[in-house]
Image (cartoon, rainbow, N blue to C red; front, side):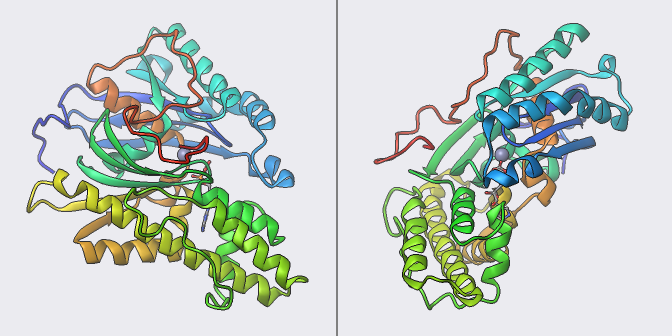
Length: 370
Ligand code: KG4
Ligand code: ZN
């Protein structure tokens, strides 16, 4: 990629940034370098998942999450710095997730990041977790905006047009459950383990997707939003009608659920593509990027690949470890902001709700996740 300065990729001195992530159930820290040409390199990326702590409850328990972050964050930062071979003095800045996410966890990472910045006399960057997911392809592929982004995790389901660093247009969002959340709840009601996504995917592999008809909520609607709660309820009703469930019943229900989610995703992302069409310069490659834990689902990935090919898009999905929550994406978003002179005050407060596009109109019927 040519090292020319562009509006979206300013040149400058190399930046070494520590990133801290504590917004949900991963405690993570990483060190990333952004070189003078605006290219990124990961020096260290340390993630401690709290899955074991939350598994007995079938979901993330905010108080347990916050306490677990407190217990291990300092050691994780130490390891990230050691593995990168840098000291606090050698950093250009410190970035921490300030939202959106669970307040208790956000406060732990944010206070730690600010304290380190203050003690070391370094600039502090408060990072929006969604922005970090959205910019990861710049770190992994050197991809520059504009591109279309689908974020599908346990807490978020959104399509975004990434216009530039700091400029995002939210297209679709979920009006109820996130897709990962729907996988988790479906798994729970079918007696499968947590997290539900991989369990449902495994069970679906041997299932018949046509045996239990399920709805495709919002398919065909002009607004590109998502709705998953009704689908999960329909699975519950089918499961109750077929109880007691055999292993085959569970597989068939999982296959039907996964097929319905694929149809919904393809239709909704297709609709987002209709809306962003004018944003792409004619003749330039159009990119669809995917982030979040649900990106690991092979059926959804295949359905998206087919959609993209049919619509003339290329698809870029970061490696799984950078698709799910991690510190490298926070460090990289911090570096991208720092390169543009965007630094935050140490008074910056955690924002459990922090939409990337504050001007996006609320989805009709939207619940708390919108
Ligand atoms: O991005 P992520 O690791 O973290 C948070 O949301 O915090 O996403 C986790 C979500 C969970 O809901 C999990 O069930 C889902 O991603 N997930 C999957 C798969 N692997 C993880 N969903 C469907 N299929 C999968 N293979
Ligand atoms: Zn995330």
